[in-house]
Length: 300
Ligand SMILES: Nc1ncnc2c1ncn2[C@@H]1O[C@H](COP(=O)(O)OP(=O)(O)OP(=O)(O)O)[C@@H](O)[C@H]1O
Image (cartoon, rainbow, N blue to C red):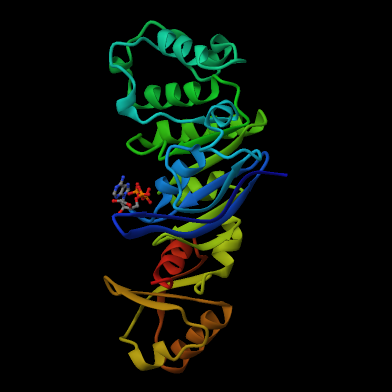
C-alpha cells in the first residue's frame, strides 16, 4: 500500500524550474531514499510532501491527504525532522520532547522514546550543549514523538563522524522495524545502499532512475569494474574499442575499466596478445557511487 504518492510534481523559483515533473510512490513500511547532487530539487520535493511548500503543478498525497489543504491532519501522520536552527539553544532535551509531544493529539510517551534513542541521561542537557550525534538523535525523537506513520529525514547524518553516522543508521533501521515508513534524503551513497529499500535518483529536477540499490547498480552501464597496472603502456584505441565498455580511467599508472564480464574477458585477451602483464588485477562489482555518477551524468 502506498502512503506517499507524488505525481508530476513541478516547482519553479523566479521562473527557474527546480522540480520538473517528479513522480514516485512510497510503500508502507519501506525506507525510501531520495538521492541526488546538490541543487537537484530533493529538499523542494520533500517539503512539498510535508506541505511546507506549495507545488506549482502536480499532485501530492500523504495517506490520501493533501499536504497543503489538509496540513493539520498530515502533520499528525507525518513526522518531519527539524532543521538545526529551529530549536532554541537553551531548551533542554526534556522540554523539547514535552513541547513537541504537546503539539499532537496522541503523542508517544517521550520517556521510552528518549531511552530508545540514547537520550535518557541527557534529559536536563540544553540543546546548545549536545554533541552533533545527540542533536541528530533528538531530531529523530522529535519527529517520532507524535506517533507518526511516516517520518521524513533530510540529510540527517551530514556533519556526523563515521561512528555517529553508523549509530544513526541503526536507529533508522529500528524506526522502520517499529512499523514507521521512512523517507530519507541523502547525499551519501553508502547510506543509501545500506538503508534504502528503493531509491529515486533525482537530477536537475527529474527522476533519473527509481529502483532498489542493487537494481540501480545493475542498470548502470559499467556494472563490472576491472583495475590493473599494465607492465607496458596500452594502446588507447584498442582499449576504447573493448566490447560493452562504459568508461576508461587512468590514474597513477593504474587503468580502471567499467563495463561487463565481456569487457573483462576481452581486456585479458588483449593483454595476453601484447604479452603485457596486469599487476594487482582486481575485478569488482560497481558500487552505488559508480551507478550514481553514471545515472546523473547521462541525464544532462
Ligand atoms: N525558496 C527558494 N527560492 C529560490 N530558489 C530556491 C529556493 N529554495 C531552493 N531554491 C533553489 O532550488 C534549487 C533546488 O534546491 P533544493 O534545496 O530543492 O535542492 P537539493 O537537491 O535539496 O539540494 P542540496 O542537496 O544542496 O540540499 C537550488 O538551486 C536552490 O538554490
